[in-house]
Image 1 (cartoon, rainbow, N blue to C red):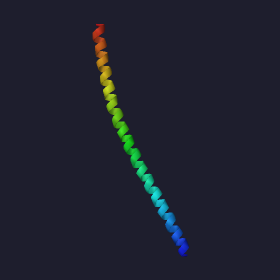
Image 2 (cartoon, helix red, strand yellow):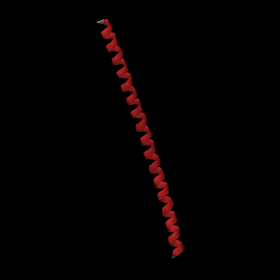
Image 3 (tube, rainbow, N blue to C red):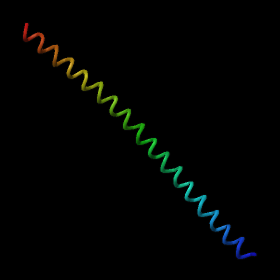
Image 4 (cartoon, rainbow, N blue to C red):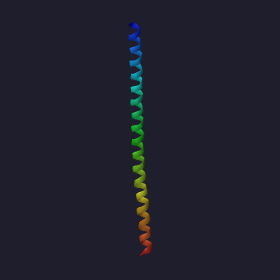
Amino acid sequence: MLRAVLMFSKVLHYSEERGQALGEYSLIIALVVLAAVAGLTALGVAVSGFFDGFLSMLEGAVT
């Protein structure tokens, strides 16, 4: 009986650690995705501004 309790305790402890690691990895992934979205948004605004200026320059040269 004691052996079964010890075995159950080890299995329970292992599953708790595994679940904790999954939670930590999901938080890391969420932070990486958030940083990527913020970076790509800023990059998109910069590229849009560049092309707006470039098109304005071309319109001025054509007319």
